[in-house]
Amino acid sequence: MGIKFGEIDSSQILQNEYKIGVLEGILGWIIHNNSLISPSKKDIEEIKKTIVGELRKKYPKSGIKYKESENE
View 1: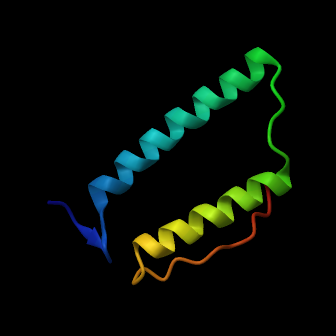
View 2: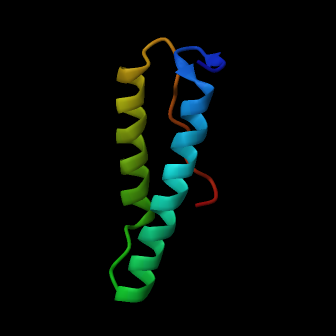
């Protein structure tokens, strides 16, 4: 077991960052190569708010808060 940050294990953080990076790359490639419509900035903000809400439920003691994106 690795170092813990509140309820979150450090090895899980790295694993999640890797998986998210892979997913972002695949999604970007699909959108670029298939002329798909990408989500608007408003859509992305709503997705982020939803995910933060889910994380807050999963890790209630973590103090996770949503911060509006500035440069997306």
